[in-house]
Amino acid sequence: AQSVTQPDIHITVSEGASLELRCNYSYGATPYLFWYVQSPGQGLQLLLKYFSGDTLVQGIKGFEAEFKRSQSSFNLRKPSVHWSDAAEYFCAVGLYNQGGKLIFGQGTELSVKP
Amino acid sequence: EPEVTQTPSHQVTQMGQEVILRCVPISNHLYFYWYRQILGQKVEFLVSFYNNEISEKSEIFDDQFSVERPDGSNFTLKIRSTKLEDSAMYFCASRGEVNNQPQHFGDGTRLSIL
Image 1 (cartoon, rainbow over the protein chains, first blue to last red):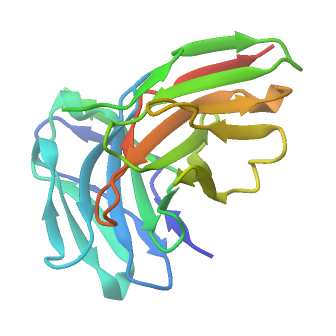
Image 2 (cartoon, rainbow over the protein chains, first blue to last red):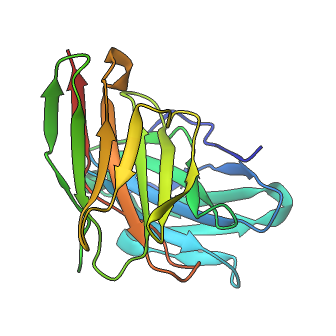
């Protein structure tokens, strides 16, 4: 069955430090992969997506993610975190042979220390 | 940038009552989805809708749930007889026809069942 795992429930980083949020997926075919961010009381905003081609994808707000097929991973990175990045981050795999539904990971809550 | 809009932002309902959650997807999108997020848990797929019919539904989407696109702009989720465990944030999403287009989410409706 398809699944997405985000091993870290909560991460705290200092402002200006680098960030890496981990995501592993289980899916039999080539996945469509996404990272979404959710601020408190808000909806899900798309940060970036991977469909094919270059395995390093750039997104909004200075985020990037790297698709590694051999590791079934799609980790999200940012070189320098800002206080406004504090939010919940969700990794998702898109099943486009099944009507396009998204399977989400559990989410990683990011706190930023001043 | 076009948005998915959801109303109301918060709905409080007595157990056993019917509730209708409303969504206006992005106007040229053709695929529509409902997801829910129980407090503290991951976002879960409920149903996908395309060409005026359900294309897929999850185990959660039982006979108490229904979806409808009553006109050219709205997409509704109805829960016929609400239960306490239906309390959650419900997200509507839409995407275009091409498979490599991501889903765009609304800000959600927080449903509280008393």
